[in-house]
Length: 523
Image (cartoon, rainbow, N blue to C red; front, side):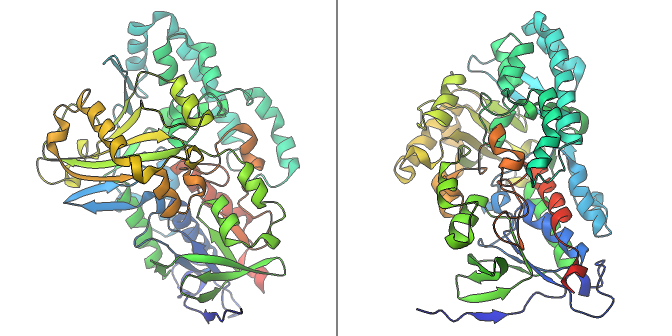
């Protein structure tokens, strides 16, 4: 049966035709068209950069508002950031405003966190993690004097990973094996085959401090016992640039990026799911929508999950590299269970970012990543943005989310059946630890499960961050920013190079700028 698709050209006047900073085409030819699928951080950043590069850009979003994983839930007077909450490289956001001739400081109010995180152990003790060396050394000396020098040595190792892995390799779009070969000396110097936990354990002896210094990969869906130690560079990133949060929540940054695009005449269409990337003669020619429309484009950029994009939007005959079999064999990041809740009282002793750890560490991670089993115990990332910005909740109230790292859908968990029981267990654990009398004070509640990640965000296996960032699924081994299978198709976001986390996602858009052709090549 042949489907008749309506071809439309509603790409607006963004980029070269907008007079808003795009280079234009001096001969009067119309600028090439770019369609960006998804309005997460990666898609928004890519659209800004492509618009400045001279493309006529249009953005398509499946949801009813921008953000993707950085969507914002408004409920009962509370504002809940759906996903990312930590900004560690603010200059990557600042670059986007500069490209548009604006100052970030005039539009986004970032606040430095102090401490960055509080890590609360199951026995009630805690560690405040920051870039204040004196405070860090004082806490380490009090807990484990023999680890003071080890911490200093670990920070030197982190600085080495920062130089070799971030400064020298971070912006390389690994497209060929020769790119990998050139990187081998740096990878060897970092001993990149080792896990981040093993690197930490080499320098740190106390079990609590080993957790403090190795938990970061969990925030991007990785197991500290298997993720490459290259991620130790996160310590150096945070020490150098700090950990920030935005007034108005992370969603405030998304709104301002949308404003930049609207100011450039770039249209954003919501409630517009893309169901197929049309490929002809090996090249992306545009996208087909759920309503039957066809939008022609010279290039297509997917900010959607890379595995889902290839598996469901690109027909199998066009995929020699990312075949269904290859996609299915990948090791995917964890899933996420997130409980958003508002309280009719404030918990002023709870900081902005807090890790509330359960009784197990290695065993719990084994259940999540290896056994794919939903355990009865858990550790939580507790986010209380009203510690910094009370406007995110009604007066006298607090806005929270509690995030539990859980197995992705490979576990077979029936989330609709167990979600409420799991949420109540989290509420009980928080009530017995850091939020006394919590259940009596909850006045707004919402949950998101790995099933929602699959059904709502079209994330393969409900994984929160695409492929797990182990060494053999990083760099060249991760989905490339320029598609290996389809000319004119590009990838940005957590599931493509260089990886997950707001900084990496923004970097993926910057790397994309290097591999997308100049507009003059379409003459």
